[in-house]
Image 1 (cartoon, rainbow, N blue to C red):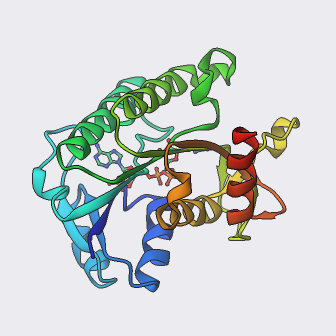
Image 2 (cartoon, rainbow, N blue to C red; image 1 turned 30 degrees about the vertical axis):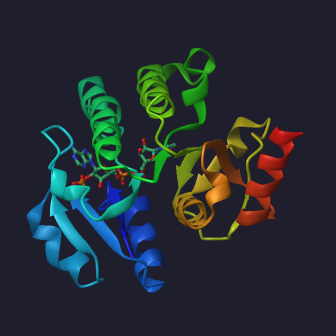
Amino acid sequence: MNKTLIIGANGQIGKLLIQMMTEQKMPVKVMLRNADQTDEFENKGAEVVIADLEAELPDDAFADCDKVVFTAGSGGKTGADKTILVDLWGACKAIDKAKQHNIKQFVMVSSRDAGDPEHGTKAIKHYNICKYFADKHLMESHLPYTILRPGRLTDGPLTGKITTTRPTDQAQQTISRANVAACILQCLDHSETVNQIEELYEGDMPIQEAFIKSIKGRLG
Ligand SMILES: NC(=O)c1ccc[n+]([C@@H]2O[C@H](COP(=O)([O-])OP(=O)(O)OC[C@H]3O[C@@H](n4cnc5c(N)ncnc54)[C@H](OP(=O)(O)O)[C@@H]3O)[C@@H](O)[C@H]2O)c1
């Protein structure tokens, strides 16, 4: 079986996702930038490739993979320069490599306001613009894509229940990283999520039902 390449594997969502995937014996290749973390991931059964999104991406990262998950990000503690280099340019480079390697599904962890940075949170407008253009590059790449746009991430529990409809109350526009990881897994398992863009928030509907409802709603 072909592998799924996880970019941002050592991140909080990445680790939760890899735990879920390796428990299900799904073949995983992880992209790390620190070789010292290799044993931790190999012990879980993942193949490791060392690469930095700020450098040229090696072809062997994408070889033998048919799916890619991009859940990397420069994080809130770095400057806007890193947001451009990692969240935008790093994502675009990964998309271009995925295209060269005929990847069958590219799952992008984007952000709530990436669809409309003009009206999103002003303090992180630059971040939302980077996510907007990374998503646009993916959509225009002709790769089969799934774009997930979670609300503010929390360390809350895995409930397995979400909504794809944005709550009107900003305070409720959150979702746990565990639920985002479960949503990614759902997308990798279900081809109907290909070429869909979904916002993700805590909700009361099982993940699969929430995705089906959203997709059917768009189809009318
Ligand atoms: N925070 C929020 O409220 C929020 C909301 C919506 C969407 N998001 C998005 O959700 C995604 C993941 O969230 P998270 O909480 O899991 O983030 P996280 O814990 O900060 O993980 C980010 C990962 O990206 C990796 N990374 C950063 N720069 C890199 C580089 N140059 N080359 C390779 N890898 C690099 C980090 O590697 P190291 O482990 O080596 O540092 C880390 O593994 C991000 O894309 C973020 O933008 C966040």
